[in-house]
Image (cartoon, rainbow over all chains, first blue to last red):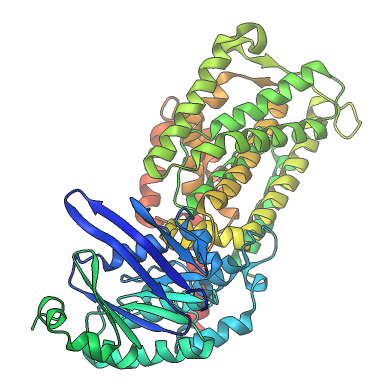
Length: 247
Length: 314
C-alpha cells in the first residue's frame, strides 16, 4: 500500500478548556479532493494551522509524504510541497498582481538573490500561464490590494499554485464571495488543480459546493472527526445533518 | 529619461560645480552627501516597514574605526579608510542585526535606540581608548597616494563622496528590484504570507539591515575624514533622528530621495543657523509639517507621481 500524502497521528491541542484537536488520526491519499466541514470553532482551521506548521500540537505528529513535519516551520513545509491559501486572502497589497505571483515563484526557488531583478529571476511565461489559468491576466499590472474579493481569493490561490504544490490546502475559498460567483470561482480553482494534478483539501460551509467538488468529506465536531467518507455518505449522516449542517 | 534620473544628474552636477562659485560650500556638501548615504541606509529599513532610531551607532562606529586605524597607521590612504568604515558597518550590522531583526515596529526602533545609547555612553566612559567626550582627532591622510592641502583634499573627498553616493544609489536600486529587495518590501504588507511562499522574513530583513548598516558605516567614515574629528555625539540618538528625518523628507520611492532630503536638511540648517540663530530646529519642524501635508511619501514620491500623471495625460 502506498504511503499517504498527508497523515496525522493522534493530534491533540486545547486552548484552555476548549479542545480544538481531539486525538485526530487522519490520512489523505494522492489525487483526493477532501472537503472539510464543521461549524465555527470545530477546529478546522486549527487542523490546517497544525498541518502547515503555524501551530505546534501538544501531542501527536504530522507526516507529509511519509516524513515527520511536525516541528518544521511553515516555510520549510511549503518548500516541501504542502502549500495553503487563506480564508482572508493574504496578499502583498503594495505589489501588482503579477509581482505577487513572481514573489511566490521566487520563494519556491528558495534563493534570495541580491542582484538579479525579480522580473528575471522567475519564469515569466509560467507566471503568465497561472494568471491566465485563474483569469487574472487582464488585471496583472494592477495593485493586488485594489482587487475585488473574488479576485483576491483567486490571486491568493494563484500564489499557492505557482509553487507547484503536491498538496494544496484551501481555507474557505468561497467565503466572502457572492452566491452567484461561488460556482464560477470553484470551477476555476478545480480546473487549475486538475491542470497541475494537485491533491487538495478545502474547508467549506456550503453543502452544494461540497457535494459538487469533493471526492471525500470529513466532518469536524468539537475538535474530532465525527464522519469521514464519500460526500453522499457523510452528507446523509443524520448526526452530521443535525450538528454540522444545522438541519 | 525619467524625472528621477534628471534629478540625479542635476544634483550631482550642482554638488560638483557649486563649489567653483562658492568655495565655502564644499564642506556642507560633503557632509550632506554623507548624510544622504546614511539616509539611504535608513530608507531600506523604511521600505520594510521598520524605522530604526539608533542607526547613528553605525555612523559613529564607522567614524571611530576610521579614527583608530588612522591613528595606528597615519599614512594609510583615505580610500582605505573609507573601506574600513564600510567594513565596520558590515561586521556590526551582521552582529546587531542577527538579533534586532527578530523584533518589529516600536520594539525594533527602540532596541536600536537603546544599543546606540550604550555605544554613546561607552565611548564617553573609556577615556583612555576613545578620548571620552572630547573624541579623537585624525591627521589628514593621503588620498590616492597624494598628500594634499586642505582645499584640494576636500575637493577630492567631495568628488569621491558624490561618486560613492551615485554608486550606492545605483546598487541600492538594483538590490530593491531583486528578489531579496522585493521580499523586503513584502515584509511591510504581509510577513506571514512571505513565510508561506517559502521566503524567510528573518533572513530577508537581516540582509536589508546589513546593507543599511554598511551605508551608515561608510557615511561615518566620510564624516570622520571630512571633519578630522570623531566624538560620541556622532552616535547620539538625536543624530539617528536626523537621519530618519532626512529619509522621510526625501522619501523612499527612489534612492535619490535620500540625497534630496539631505540637501534640504543641510541647506535649512545652514541658512537657518545664519539668519535664525538658535531656531534652526524650529525651521526644520515647519519643513516636516509642510511635508506631512504636501508630500506625505516624501519628495521622491512626488517626482514619481508627477511622472505618472504626465504619462496619463499623454
